[in-house]
Length: 266
Image (cartoon, rainbow, N blue to C red; front, side, top):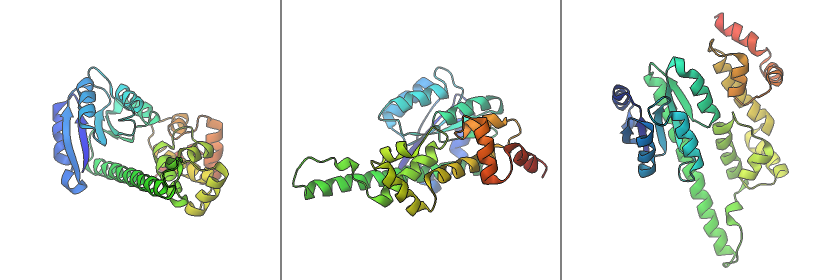
């Protein structure tokens, strides 16, 4: 069963999370809780949970420092981190997303929002496990067929599985600097061949897929009036505001500012 832990220096928040999250329905085990960052890191190292729900600002080690530490450790680099943030800490949440946090929840806590985020987190964990099991099984089969000859079986992943793993990675890292070449390398496929596979399996070209995903998230963020357009651009992976404006209008039909005005006017 998938394990989760809670980290928050406010014990009432820990109690609230334990109470409002339907752990059994999600089929997730609450394995532990901690009240400061240092204890949290020790707990994570001991329990090795797949999901960490943590406050951004805590005594000792902050949530951001924790993510940085987890990402540097081979054992915990893929741990899903979900942040809890107060409104006045939102700049920290933006930084957390850039650093690879899975998602964040603003206080006051919303039960439906937390449930949906945890549901997505669980699906991500299960997909990763399935992909890992597939590669392990494939490696064993190839070793059998090769009669013990040394080959790089880890690099052997078929077309559909390559694209599925790539899509999972893109959905979790769309806000980073990713390219067709880097993603192809992660699934051990020649970039030119991967481009063809990706189009065949998803119906979209690689760049179109990434841009569409980024812009759908940008549309949601633009509905938050306290976020500047250039901040939204950075949060979804565009470092150049001019390019962001151009690509947004190309795909959505209006500029980011025009889109925001249309949503706020509803």
